[in-house]
Structures are given as C-alpha cells and as structure tokens.
Image (cartoon, rainbow, N blue to C red):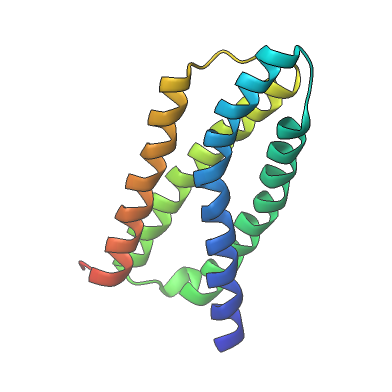
Length: 136
C-alpha cells in the first residue's frame, strides 16, 4: 500500500502542476498566435503538457480510489472525491479550450483565463483542507 500511496502523491503533484500551468500557458499561446498568425512552440508545449498530465490525473484518481477502498470509504473521503470530480471537470474544460486553441480559436479573454486559473487554486485548497482536517 505504501507504493500505491507514493504513486498517488506523485501523480497528484504532476496533475496539479498542469492544472495551474495550462490556463496560464493558454494566455501566452493566445498572444503568440496573435503575433505570429500561426501555431507556434507554445501551442505545442501546452498540448503536450495537457496530454501528459491527463494520464497522471487518471492514475491519481485510480490510485486514490484504490487507497480509499471505494465501498468502505469514510464520509470525508466522499467529500474529497466530490471536490476532485469538480477539479477534474475544471480540467476537462481546460482541455476543451486547448482543443479550440489548436484550431486557432481563442474565445476567452486573458482576464477570464487568469480567473479560471485561480479558481483551481481554491479547489485544491478545499481538497487539502478536507484531507488534513477530516471534518467528519
């Protein structure tokens, strides 16, 4: 079980890096696209980062469910799982923006992307609070 926990923590760390980095990278990609008028290196980097961390997120979710025992999880773990699902939905929305950006469509403003980026921070803080405090 120790190795599962180590893999879980490593994958969560990698996934979180992307959750925080990809929306910010979209801002710079958008600026690069406006300047060059074509797909540049930032777009490639953003897509690769998103794809790689998507796998990490899946592994983190699977190992987290394995550690939690799925059917015998305490109540606080169910709350954590609900918050993780919301964060995964946020990440899915990010992926949708990456796919549109790949086609040269940047509909979100820089301000929206910054706020969107910071929203994930509050989600992670909530998850960490539940894990540390175990409120019930």
